[in-house]
Length: 171
Image (cartoon, rainbow, N blue to C red; front, side, top):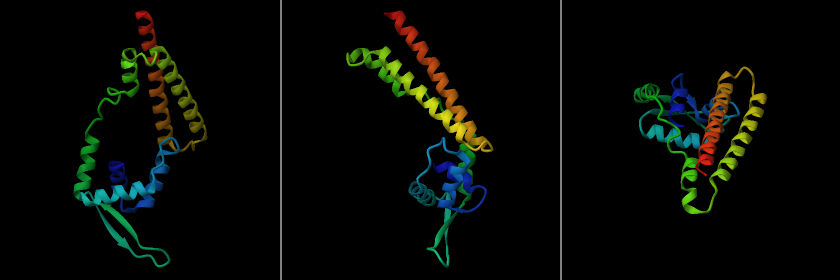
């Protein structure tokens, strides 16, 4: 959450609730909606680390609000984030660990685990399809997020099929 908030502040100053709304609008309903409390805690940490600065703004009919802006250090952290490629996301996969250790425990059948995981992925794909149908067609970022998630799920389903084929050959 830290770096996406910095990215939103790169375009100009904003307060926490405004940043929450911007994230929701940008990412759509497929992405877990950020909690406003989480946003303010993160902003506090960013401020403490010198990546942003906050300024209290008086309001006549409401409590004062704090508006944050990016510091030079924050802009540099953001540049570094954009320059750094992401690590392999699936090397430490919890499901694969279950699959690998199941035979040693005698508590779970590998094929049953694969089938259960397959059902979970298929249910998730159905949910994502419903989200895509309900999402505003003009929000391309949200649609790309959903499409990416569905492509990852399809790859996971293909991998489950491969695992099942390999394990059935061993029997």
